[in-house]
Image (cartoon, rainbow, N blue to C red; front, side):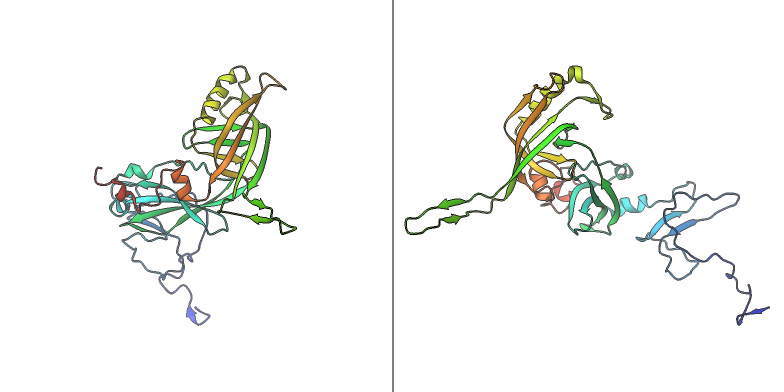
Length: 311
Protein backbone atom coordinates (compact mmCIF):
# COMPACT_ATOMS: atom_id res chain seq x y z
CA UNK A 1 0.00 0.00 0.00
CA UNK A 2 1.36 3.44 -0.94
CA UNK A 3 0.66 6.28 1.48
CA UNK A 4 2.02 9.81 1.12
CA UNK A 5 4.76 8.63 -1.22
CA UNK A 6 6.10 5.87 1.05
CA UNK A 7 5.38 2.32 1.99
CA UNK A 8 3.01 2.30 4.95
CA UNK A 9 4.59 0.43 7.91
CA UNK A 10 7.30 -0.76 5.55
CA UNK A 11 10.35 0.51 7.49
CA UNK A 12 11.74 -1.36 10.48
CA UNK A 13 11.12 1.46 13.01
CA UNK A 14 7.88 2.84 11.54
CA UNK A 15 5.66 1.83 14.45
CA UNK A 16 8.12 2.77 17.20
CA UNK A 17 6.92 5.38 19.68
CA UNK A 18 7.91 8.94 18.79
CA UNK A 19 10.51 10.27 21.30
CA UNK A 20 8.88 12.75 23.64
CA UNK A 21 9.74 14.81 26.69
CA UNK A 22 7.58 13.93 29.71
CA UNK A 23 8.20 15.81 32.94
CA UNK A 24 7.91 14.63 36.55
CA UNK A 25 8.19 10.88 35.93
CA UNK A 26 8.34 9.32 39.38
CA UNK A 27 8.72 5.61 38.61
CA UNK A 28 9.20 3.06 35.85
CA UNK A 29 8.34 -0.64 35.75
CA UNK A 30 9.59 -3.44 33.49
CA UNK A 31 8.14 -6.93 33.70
CA UNK A 32 7.38 -10.17 31.85
CA UNK A 33 10.59 -10.23 29.86
CA UNK A 34 14.35 -10.60 29.77
CA UNK A 35 16.13 -7.26 29.65
CA UNK A 36 19.74 -6.51 28.86
CA UNK A 37 19.69 -2.79 29.56
CA UNK A 38 17.36 0.13 30.29
CA UNK A 39 18.56 3.66 29.52
CA UNK A 40 16.70 6.96 30.08
CA UNK A 41 17.84 10.38 28.89
CA UNK A 42 16.15 13.79 29.09
CA UNK A 43 17.66 15.04 25.82
CA UNK A 44 15.04 14.11 23.20
CA UNK A 45 16.74 16.15 20.48
CA UNK A 46 19.48 13.56 19.99
CA UNK A 47 19.58 11.61 16.73
CA UNK A 48 18.01 8.19 17.01
CA UNK A 49 20.57 5.41 17.47
CA UNK A 50 20.75 1.93 18.92
CA UNK A 51 24.18 2.71 20.37
CA UNK A 52 23.71 3.64 24.00
CA UNK A 53 26.40 5.96 25.39
CA UNK A 54 28.78 4.24 27.78
CA UNK A 55 29.67 7.45 29.66
CA UNK A 56 27.12 9.37 31.71
CA UNK A 57 26.16 12.74 30.30
CA UNK A 58 24.49 15.69 32.02
CA UNK A 59 21.12 14.64 30.54
CA UNK A 60 21.44 10.98 31.62
CA UNK A 61 18.84 9.99 34.20
CA UNK A 62 18.96 6.22 34.39
CA UNK A 63 21.20 3.45 33.03
CA UNK A 64 20.51 -0.10 34.27
CA UNK A 65 22.75 -2.91 32.99
CA UNK A 66 21.04 -5.67 35.02
CA UNK A 67 24.45 -7.21 35.73
CA UNK A 68 23.47 -8.96 38.92
CA UNK A 69 21.86 -5.92 40.52
CA UNK A 70 19.13 -3.34 39.98
CA UNK A 71 21.57 -0.43 40.23
CA UNK A 72 20.92 2.23 37.59
CA UNK A 73 22.86 5.20 38.95
CA UNK A 74 26.34 6.55 38.37
CA UNK A 75 27.71 6.30 41.92
CA UNK A 76 30.74 4.24 40.93
CA UNK A 77 31.60 6.65 38.15
CA UNK A 78 31.16 9.65 40.42
CA UNK A 79 33.33 8.16 43.16
CA UNK A 80 36.18 8.00 40.68
CA UNK A 81 35.63 11.53 39.39
CA UNK A 82 33.96 13.77 41.99
CA UNK A 83 36.02 15.26 44.83
CA UNK A 84 33.17 17.06 46.53
CA UNK A 85 29.68 18.50 46.09
CA UNK A 86 28.91 22.19 46.53
CA UNK A 87 25.49 23.41 47.63
CA UNK A 88 24.72 26.88 46.32
CA UNK A 89 21.73 29.16 46.73
CA UNK A 90 20.25 32.05 44.78
CA UNK A 91 17.23 34.19 45.61
CA UNK A 92 15.14 33.63 42.52
CA UNK A 93 15.73 36.24 39.82
CA UNK A 94 18.73 37.93 41.45
CA UNK A 95 21.46 35.93 39.71
CA UNK A 96 23.50 36.16 42.92
CA UNK A 97 24.66 32.65 43.82
CA UNK A 98 26.37 32.02 47.16
CA UNK A 99 27.99 28.77 48.29
CA UNK A 100 26.76 27.49 51.65
CA UNK A 101 28.15 23.97 52.00
CA UNK A 102 30.82 21.69 50.61
CA UNK A 103 30.45 17.92 51.09
CA UNK A 104 33.65 15.88 50.56
CA UNK A 105 33.01 12.66 48.59
CA UNK A 106 35.20 9.66 49.39
CA UNK A 107 32.68 6.81 49.75
CA UNK A 108 29.27 5.95 48.33
CA UNK A 109 27.67 6.81 51.67
CA UNK A 110 28.91 10.41 51.34
CA UNK A 111 26.28 11.03 48.65
CA UNK A 112 23.55 10.62 51.28
CA UNK A 113 23.51 13.79 53.38
CA UNK A 114 21.18 16.41 54.84
CA UNK A 115 22.09 20.09 55.16
CA UNK A 116 19.98 22.72 56.90
CA UNK A 117 20.14 26.27 55.56
CA UNK A 118 19.27 28.60 58.43
CA UNK A 119 19.80 31.84 56.53
CA UNK A 120 16.73 31.77 54.24
CA UNK A 121 14.15 34.53 54.36
CA UNK A 122 10.41 33.95 54.74
CA UNK A 123 8.05 34.49 51.77
CA UNK A 124 10.96 34.09 49.38
CA UNK A 125 11.61 31.76 46.45
CA UNK A 126 15.09 30.26 46.32
CA UNK A 127 16.96 28.20 43.77
CA UNK A 128 19.38 25.61 45.14
CA UNK A 129 22.13 24.08 43.04
CA UNK A 130 24.04 20.86 43.64
CA UNK A 131 27.41 21.25 41.92
CA UNK A 132 30.01 18.46 41.53
CA UNK A 133 33.67 19.45 41.84
CA UNK A 134 35.98 17.42 39.59
CA UNK A 135 39.74 18.03 39.73
CA UNK A 136 39.12 21.40 41.36
CA UNK A 137 36.68 22.52 38.66
CA UNK A 138 32.96 23.04 39.20
CA UNK A 139 30.58 21.08 36.99
CA UNK A 140 27.02 21.68 35.83
CA UNK A 141 24.45 23.13 38.23
CA UNK A 142 21.61 20.75 39.13
CA UNK A 143 18.92 23.19 40.25
CA UNK A 144 15.79 22.79 42.37
CA UNK A 145 13.52 25.56 43.66
CA UNK A 146 11.65 26.07 46.94
CA UNK A 147 9.48 28.78 48.48
CA UNK A 148 10.36 29.38 52.13
CA UNK A 149 7.55 30.18 54.56
CA UNK A 150 7.44 30.25 58.34
CA UNK A 151 5.64 31.95 61.22
CA UNK A 152 7.04 34.09 63.99
CA UNK A 153 10.69 34.96 64.48
CA UNK A 154 13.86 32.90 64.75
CA UNK A 155 17.04 33.83 66.59
CA UNK A 156 19.76 31.26 65.94
CA UNK A 157 23.36 30.22 65.68
CA UNK A 158 24.76 27.42 63.53
CA UNK A 159 23.72 24.69 66.00
CA UNK A 160 21.16 26.42 68.24
CA UNK A 161 17.73 27.83 67.39
CA UNK A 162 15.01 29.65 69.34
CA UNK A 163 11.58 30.34 67.88
CA UNK A 164 8.70 32.57 69.01
CA UNK A 165 5.26 33.18 67.50
CA UNK A 166 3.43 35.32 70.09
CA UNK A 167 3.47 39.04 70.97
CA UNK A 168 6.13 39.85 68.38
CA UNK A 169 7.24 43.45 67.93
CA UNK A 170 10.35 44.79 66.23
CA UNK A 171 11.50 48.41 66.05
CA UNK A 172 14.44 49.22 63.80
CA UNK A 173 16.59 52.06 62.53
CA UNK A 174 19.11 52.55 59.73
CA UNK A 175 22.41 53.86 61.09
CA UNK A 176 24.38 56.33 58.97
CA UNK A 177 26.49 58.37 61.41
CA UNK A 178 26.96 62.06 60.58
CA UNK A 179 28.18 65.17 62.36
CA UNK A 180 26.73 68.68 62.18
CA UNK A 181 29.41 71.40 62.19
CA UNK A 182 28.27 74.93 62.98
CA UNK A 183 30.45 77.87 61.92
CA UNK A 184 30.45 81.56 62.87
CA UNK A 185 30.43 82.87 59.30
CA UNK A 186 27.60 80.79 57.80
CA UNK A 187 23.88 80.72 58.37
CA UNK A 188 23.73 76.97 57.72
CA UNK A 189 25.94 74.24 59.16
CA UNK A 190 28.09 71.70 57.38
CA UNK A 191 27.05 68.05 57.57
CA UNK A 192 30.03 65.72 57.67
CA UNK A 193 29.76 62.01 56.90
CA UNK A 194 32.89 60.02 57.62
CA UNK A 195 33.34 56.34 56.75
CA UNK A 196 31.04 53.86 55.07
CA UNK A 197 28.88 52.88 58.06
CA UNK A 198 25.38 51.93 56.90
CA UNK A 199 23.74 49.23 59.01
CA UNK A 200 20.53 48.27 60.80
CA UNK A 201 19.93 48.03 64.52
CA UNK A 202 16.81 47.38 66.49
CA UNK A 203 14.85 46.01 69.42
CA UNK A 204 12.90 42.76 69.22
CA UNK A 205 10.29 41.52 71.68
CA UNK A 206 8.40 38.22 71.80
CA UNK A 207 7.05 35.53 74.11
CA UNK A 208 9.41 32.55 74.10
CA UNK A 209 7.67 29.35 75.22
CA UNK A 210 8.92 25.78 75.09
CA UNK A 211 6.89 23.73 72.59
CA UNK A 212 6.60 20.02 71.80
CA UNK A 213 7.42 18.92 68.24
CA UNK A 214 6.86 22.48 66.96
CA UNK A 215 3.08 21.93 67.09
CA UNK A 216 2.51 24.92 69.39
CA UNK A 217 1.69 22.67 72.33
CA UNK A 218 3.09 25.21 74.75
CA UNK A 219 4.77 23.87 77.88
CA UNK A 220 4.11 27.07 79.83
CA UNK A 221 4.47 25.57 83.32
CA UNK A 222 8.26 25.01 83.09
CA UNK A 223 9.26 27.36 80.29
CA UNK A 224 11.25 29.49 82.72
CA UNK A 225 14.02 26.89 82.30
CA UNK A 226 13.76 27.30 78.53
CA UNK A 227 14.06 31.08 78.90
CA UNK A 228 17.04 30.75 81.26
CA UNK A 229 18.80 28.88 78.45
CA UNK A 230 17.63 31.55 76.00
CA UNK A 231 19.18 34.33 78.11
CA UNK A 232 22.47 32.42 78.30
CA UNK A 233 22.26 32.11 74.52
CA UNK A 234 21.56 35.83 74.03
CA UNK A 235 24.45 36.80 76.32
CA UNK A 236 27.14 34.43 74.98
CA UNK A 237 28.64 37.09 72.69
CA UNK A 238 28.40 34.99 69.52
CA UNK A 239 27.01 36.28 66.18
CA UNK A 240 23.47 35.22 65.34
CA UNK A 241 20.88 35.16 62.58
CA UNK A 242 17.61 37.00 63.27
CA UNK A 243 14.69 36.23 60.95
CA UNK A 244 11.19 37.70 60.83
CA UNK A 245 8.09 36.12 59.28
CA UNK A 246 7.70 38.99 56.77
CA UNK A 247 11.04 38.27 55.07
CA UNK A 248 13.44 40.45 57.04
CA UNK A 249 16.64 38.65 58.03
CA UNK A 250 19.86 39.96 59.54
CA UNK A 251 23.27 38.80 60.71
CA UNK A 252 23.45 40.36 64.17
CA UNK A 253 25.11 40.63 67.55
CA UNK A 254 23.03 41.05 70.70
CA UNK A 255 23.91 44.23 72.64
CA UNK A 256 22.99 45.53 76.10
CA UNK A 257 21.01 43.28 78.46
CA UNK A 258 17.91 41.21 77.60
CA UNK A 259 14.85 42.00 79.72
CA UNK A 260 11.74 40.09 80.77
CA UNK A 261 8.36 41.78 81.32
CA UNK A 262 5.70 39.85 83.25
CA UNK A 263 3.12 42.65 83.31
CA UNK A 264 0.64 40.67 81.21
CA UNK A 265 1.29 37.17 82.56
CA UNK A 266 3.80 35.43 84.80
CA UNK A 267 3.68 32.36 82.59
CA UNK A 268 3.89 34.23 79.28
CA UNK A 269 6.44 37.00 79.89
CA UNK A 270 7.73 39.15 77.03
CA UNK A 271 11.46 38.90 76.37
CA UNK A 272 13.14 41.95 74.80
CA UNK A 273 16.65 42.23 73.37
CA UNK A 274 18.59 44.82 71.40
CA UNK A 275 20.70 43.95 68.38
CA UNK A 276 22.95 45.47 65.76
CA UNK A 277 23.67 44.24 62.23
CA UNK A 278 27.27 43.06 61.81
CA UNK A 279 27.35 41.65 58.26
CA UNK A 280 25.49 40.74 55.09
CA UNK A 281 23.35 37.62 55.42
CA UNK A 282 23.71 37.09 51.66
CA UNK A 283 27.52 37.10 51.75
CA UNK A 284 29.44 33.83 52.09
CA UNK A 285 32.49 35.52 53.66
CA UNK A 286 30.38 37.21 56.34
CA UNK A 287 28.53 33.98 57.14
CA UNK A 288 31.78 32.03 57.43
CA UNK A 289 33.63 34.70 59.43
CA UNK A 290 30.75 34.78 61.93
CA UNK A 291 30.58 30.97 62.28
CA UNK A 292 27.14 30.57 60.69
CA UNK A 293 28.39 28.22 57.95
CA UNK A 294 31.45 25.94 57.71
CA UNK A 295 32.24 26.56 54.05
CA UNK A 296 35.37 28.71 53.70
CA UNK A 297 35.22 30.66 50.41
CA UNK A 298 38.93 31.46 50.60
CA UNK A 299 39.84 27.80 50.10
CA UNK A 300 39.36 26.51 46.57
CA UNK A 301 38.30 23.00 47.55
CA UNK A 302 38.12 20.43 50.29
CA UNK A 303 41.53 19.18 49.16
CA UNK A 304 43.13 22.37 50.51
CA UNK A 305 41.61 21.64 53.89
CA UNK A 306 43.39 18.31 54.03
CA UNK A 307 40.28 16.18 53.65
CA UNK A 308 41.96 13.84 51.20
CA UNK A 309 45.47 13.61 52.60
CA UNK A 310 44.66 12.64 56.16
CA UNK A 311 45.42 16.01 57.73
